[in-house]
Length: 330
Image (cartoon, rainbow, N blue to C red; front, top):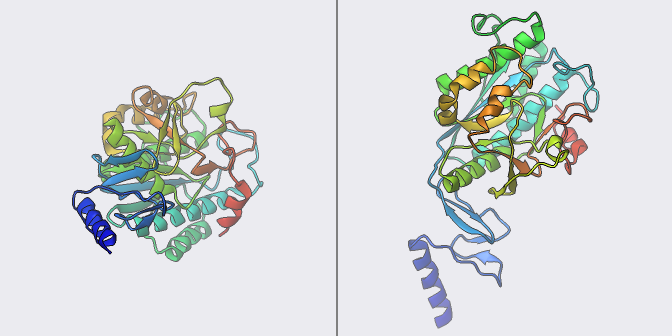
């Protein structure tokens, strides 16, 4: 009886001083009232990863603007190849959006103090596709803001080299960057329409961002995909612990990544210059940012790029691709 009372008193005192207790015999945390198999972290307060302990969150997150860029008229830009499963491009776009909506829905339930907004910049998809996008958002109870791309909006900023597909690709990307600059207040997630995502994507990226940014004392960039190219050379890297998995330092991404308004403003010239014309690689001036700032990718992947199976920037290793594809049928 005395032992039980003392234990309860000790737990209360620990909570008062914001300490956490681990009961390794019961594999629980009495102060959190959780099993150690559960997520022990509290958004914008503390990040806990066993057995590494607690990281106090100094870099708090207020909001996330997700900007989804869609084009259902071009199968694979700049390539004469087919995608894995060989379906029409609209099928990849809709499944990609469906997986993203599932992740947003989960994040809204778990991270209720974070303001999440989703905008689609669509490059003139047909009416049926737009209707399906709206139906998916309605099923997931998420409000969509769909913007139909004006292909002539940035004619004074983009060099037209005679390839309409490339010109429209650059235009839609620049439109996403300007939306982020005008509307975003904190974090921004730029998403292309041929990635399928795990349900935990948004939750994990936000909780990893706050953890690593607090530890590093700086803004960072997170790429959600574990690309094959990362394992085809004798590349050296650093590995950090995120909220739920390992993250490795990388120096290249495609145009799907999460960062902050601070990074966007600091490197605004790079973002605009990347869209002035077709570069080799396409993301040349985005990759230059990663020479100065931390850019990290998860191990294993949170998002899978559904392109040709032989692409160095395609499907991620050790992921059940078929299961992810079938799960997001629309």
